[in-house]
Image 1: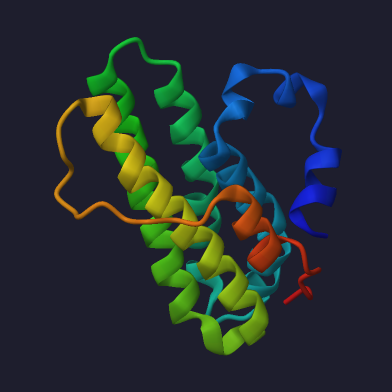
Image 2: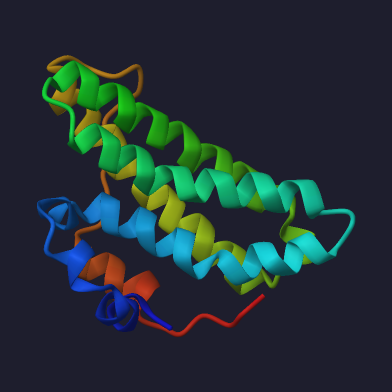
Length: 159
């Protein structure tokens, strides 16, 4: 299932919330959903069982922290939760790369590209919330249409 198809499956109770307007939230929600089967497969392998649990929890935390931060009233509070989401995205990408031998290479690359896009968006978004720079250089990222065409459109094989 590609990104556009997946978006059609998300219920209105979620898509009608103003939070849905944040691309980074949608991407975090998407990767947590599509990686469910990945983590199920990894859990069945004793060598990757603990990584499976960590990956699932990190992926789940990305959109959850964005949602919680979005609901905060001050920029400093929002930035703190967006930074948590940034850390979770990096952790998930790190762990997915480490278990790459137990997954199809196309799946690993797809998941890592989405996570990298989330990281880049958050790196550019956090300073606007905090009103001063983050410890990293600004990162350029693809526009949504470029990202969809390059990464999200082709169906991805299950791991």
